[in-house]
Image (cartoon, rainbow, N blue to C red):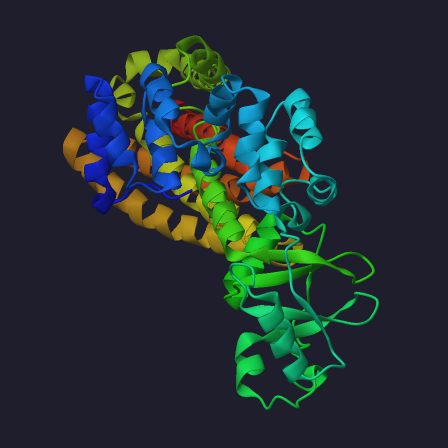
Length: 449
């Protein structure tokens, strides 16, 4: 889904104002110049009452495209108010791969009704796509492909394409197969158009790029498109039989969804959530995350309580005790972000984890020494107490080293046990750096003072 940029803000604002003022004709006029993705953005940005008004104004001919662009929760709300005939009409406008994405988000009852209203050929093709997980190459692929045999000439391919009359969108190459439909390679449009017509397809077929296995994850598919600058790529089964192709438009959606999920997960939210979801529902979702953070805060408070007598004797410690946890949290989040990114890109594995851990500990040690020295000098000057400056400097160095270790190891351990590091890594890291920072600072102060 695209999002409004500065060039689109004027029609988007005009549409919102027209809806707010109850000017239906003005809103309809603005919508005529908007892309379905822009209308989807407008629907997501409006409160439920105004959203319902705008949805009623959407041209039925683009209902399916708009529904495909909105987030799942908003789509569910809009679909609730549609009858089965409207849903069938909406899906008829979509390509098979887009229809599969749309149908997978429908309740099971509605999915059955939509499938029942399709012609047999489209239903069979759609059911074939629905067999694969949504976040796999099979779930992303499009069955609308053009294949050519390797034992024919380019002239035969030219004549076939002219007789066909059109080619699918995002077609930059054709897939070469044998008589049994097994993938043999690819024939680019450039080679098709620039070589003599009597050339055999096999002579200009590129065979050095592997097809994508149908069970490959969406993340792996996106990585291949990024690494090799692909516009389309073939998808094969375990027998190397060509099943379909993945195109760049679907991969862009995967990349965007993963980026949104990474940001939202750090706050315990879902990127498919409705911005204007009911208050009770939103509060219930956030309550668990707030409860987890409360437990970590209580744990830090418990650590502080163990040094109550020390704080009573040296009040200065209370002023400074947040410094070490805060610095550790920032340093740890830097390492955590680096590691989660490496995991997402497939750059981090068992063979290089040790090397990265040593590097991060080295960075933590160097920064610890530098900032410990700066803090020691500053605190000694501020409070005229060298001991407190040394204690805070030492605590800072200890916590930066611990932050580097935790930022590296927590996402690794979480991934091994099946926990999303982007979702839980930040909370776990904060707990570690808060507790260790307080223990180091107050523990050293108790021991030395």
